[in-house]
Length: 549
Image 1 (spheres, helix red, strand yellow):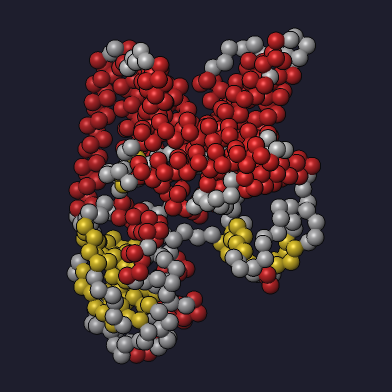
Image 2 (tube, helix red, strand yellow):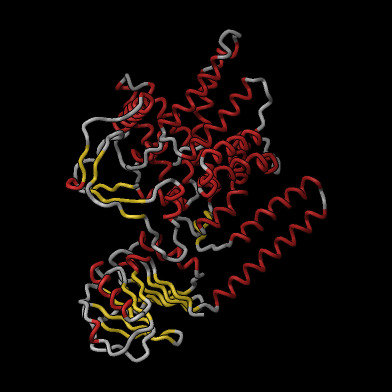
């Protein structure tokens, strides 16, 4: 289960503490808002089904920590690393980014900064992944180079490299992205130790097989999909992209090599990224050219900071240099984000369209490898099918009519969708909150392909809305003496006192929005059930969505 502690209460108990709770955990539910992230399924695939909110009066913690020797070593190491980082990198938001880059600790990260990294296509450098493991692998290989030269100590080198990789992975929180990279590098190390020629494709396939056998649900994890798509894309396309242009100047060639890596990684990650996140960072190339090498330097600098932590003078100097580098990188990210058309949003593709995009990519690659006209023809057929499906989707959305009552805690928000136009009724404060818009409205507008958004005046205590031949009656605060004749949808808001006897007309549907208290909602449900009126509680059952086509 997920446990939430009240912010103004005492700090949560340390890891390894056994707590006894006195409240009933609640099942995890989805908001039900169209296009929103399926959080319930995500938690279920990670073995989490319930959640609970605790105050100091709701739980009792024992006095001991129940950790194994390995867990204690990992936690102590992690605590030491965070202590040193906080001691010498003591400015925000540099501290939060420094913690995330080295050990994957994200509690101190600035949310707006993370959004900027996401919008510019470099959020992958914040997550501990192959980039970080590659640096650790490179450092360990340099350290163990003398051991490879002597026959008696040659066996010790891979043991040190593997130990270093996995200790770092555990200290970094053993996240899925770092475990994938650790497994792949482990396959490379073991292959070299056994004298077998390393194959990146085989190592990639073996690491994926081990992870899927250990946890089959990881196949539905976007991080798993994007991580393996990126590595596979580098293996298949990096050389072709790099050799497409030749620069005799070494500096220009190095810059082009960085660009080629970004372009190659984007080829296979773009379809799945569009399918899941519905957006594309237009300026990802110029962002990655600066951010990737700079973040690598910062990670190496943080490792140096830990090594020289015995000397206060050197540590202070190193910390100041790291702060400047992090601030420079953050400034670059924000500048790119401010560029026009930096983020292409609202892209909606279906699963068949994503499959067709991958078919087009591989057909073009096969055509280039085999110089065959047949693959060119199949690529053209796949492209035509892709655009046909998109056209059909746009035609379908152009003819749609739907009623949507959002599931936003303690807020009233309704939209009436006609074609690609949405008319909004509800709390105006939601429209000025960027977080609310990104989390609730943008996914729904992408799902319905909304092009025009109209905002109406705030809802009155009683209001009759006519839409697509339907009557929608909304009231709040008190129950009206009667409903309009032939009301199709009756929507209740606020702490409306239960008084159904006043209704002279029965509505076809009765809906309570998230502002209605649970106790009042239960009264309305009992009354609706007794008269066999369809009832929907947005608070309990998620968003109310009706397609009127």
